[in-house]
Length: 117
Length: 110
Image (cartoon, rainbow over all chains, first blue to last red; front, top):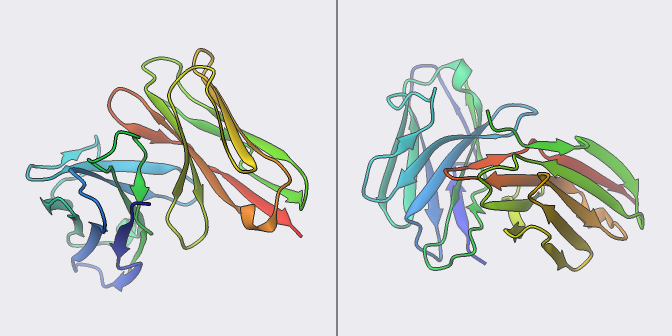
């Protein structure tokens, strides 16, 4: 099956620094990738839809200057948490659709747990 | 506000028991209903993508049904095994995006 690799799986950083999370589709091309955030005991919350070669579409309430998304190729999307603060500590996970199939299923990365001190 | 609810939030069953969980979703603007299995420290893995009212799908001991008119889907596991322990997520695909439930966390006791 299609594989999505996400890293780092865990990152701890100091307040004020920026953190980049990568999401790669290893064996398929993904024109669209999705970034989610999960708060404890809550569902996956869509942050933004990342489109290859164009600007990401952000969900209401998600600061685009805070969460920079770049989707420069058909296999890579990155999420950069800029000037991170403790309230940005969370679990972030990406998913992608395989442009070569029409099953509609999403392929997920393993997720990244961010802790901001 | 579109809401996807899953119940129960968690359950423990004995090995060999059969079990089922529910996913409730909006009955309007329906496009698809997904079920995912999410083991700890791994990626969520697609189980089923269901699009038609009355759909029934099966993969081994796991099966799912879909009722789009009343907005619910059931996931069944027959003869649960310890390796079935995971969180089972459903996701509603409407016109624009996927909306996930909070998941049902299943623990199968040996």
